[in-house]
Length: 145
Image 1 (cartoon, rainbow, N blue to C red):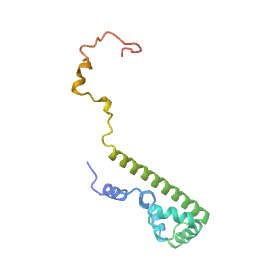
Image 2: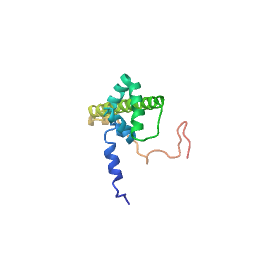
Image 3: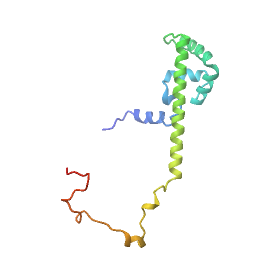
Image 4: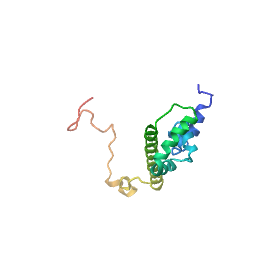
């Protein structure tokens, strides 16, 4: 029996684009980042590289304003660094995935042609069925199971 609560459908919607912040961060983390004008993984990376220290200070104030457990600026800076590294990894993985899809769509007929046998080659081809193969003869290096 399948669940009818709709959680699975919500999870699929939430993870439709793996590069969105909500696909790899918690809800409160996304909420904080949106409060400072960060809406994508690219935004997070560029803003952290330019203003990491200011973002960490803003996070301590935001946590106080939201009545969350207090955190030191250093802890917030470490958290932002982890989120940024995660964002880089997600973007890198997504780019590799997109390249592999593109590569597979452009090489849709990548079967080697040397395995093809044409009608005029039939004189040179010999096919032995399993009935014709001697079962009691083992080839070198083979053993009976």
